Length: 519
Image 1 (cartoon, rainbow, N blue to C red):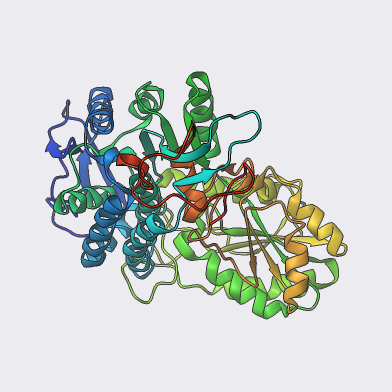
Image 2 (cartoon, helix red, strand yellow):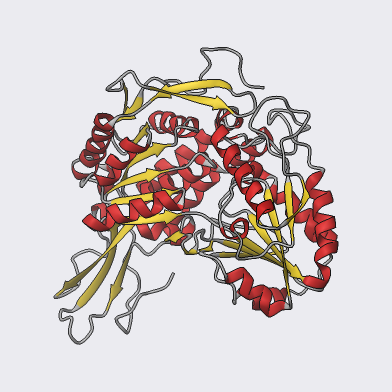
């Protein structure tokens, strides 16, 4: 249950910001109260950053990049810091997991699983120091001139990393690990609903001796956050969140040609093909849909099945999803917690009402659990006979609401799946792997899972269409934090090693043609 101590805080310095390597006092007395969604009570509070605090954080990051040692270190040296961060995060798994249910409603068990992944995320990025082609030797083309070409990848500069309230620990880790390995400095802006993980990350970087100003951590609302995006000293914005905020950020960055990565919303589809058992599909989908109460951008929420099997699937899904135990996220017996805020519950309920009004059949749920007198809880809900043109099929609900859409054959199912402004995730349920691959190549989606809701940011995560720009995780997630520079020399440099922030690894082997060398 939520800690009853009014002075409880999961962080050491909730009344301060981490700026320039120090825990500094805010510019005002404004605070943000985090409301625990299971109890509707204040869980803890943190200082609220105003524009002056944002400016101070950016100034610290700018100084650390322009004058500090961080971008001048080799990638191997920076990887050493990442490995030390990984080890410290492993020691703090429970500290990171404990407050998460009172921020987003996530089950404590799932929060602990997410916290356990943070160390490996930093470790995997550290390993890229030895494999990623930060520099390559090329033979100049006929118009290039010179005797040798060197292509180097350098840090983009100061990064504003803006994370949402759902999955803040993992999302912060992916953004920070990639930016740090690249040699960037960071202002990590946390969501008012879920600030704890970012503060704990700051504590860890302080413990490992990260140079001052390389990572700065603040929590802010919209006005101060926009000031961060507009600041001309910020070279790149990496944002995860809503489409509305993403469009606003993209327009601001376009005005000053700042680099931007956007991981936005989804309305992900699952195709249940004719050879796959409806009960197995229903159980797999209901299991994944309960995670974080459906408040996940890549959650599978549009379920497309041949019309002749529609009713059997709806019956199986309604039974499986409807019997999920909803309750206190700290209770080990609970299988799904509340949504994050009162506003979010109202949003989900408004979509449920809209689904009824549009003629979809409410097959399960649709209300608030009768056994829970307080908290932002919503029943697991299933709609049947949903028209893909309807609001509940097209707009991201961000809650435990599933829509079953009938299709006349496989090709129409694929067309329906692609008939969306989003393209983040998808699934294909079939016993035939070759068939699953063939169908996946026809889906306009950043990830396609076989027989389940699957994603893997160690490879790459991101979306097509309005689901965003760029990728997070792995090699593809590192690239957006780097700028590419071509250097054309008359002859070989005096050393086979590049100095400073250009890494100390040997140059890649000579290419016979002026093209990108793989890795």
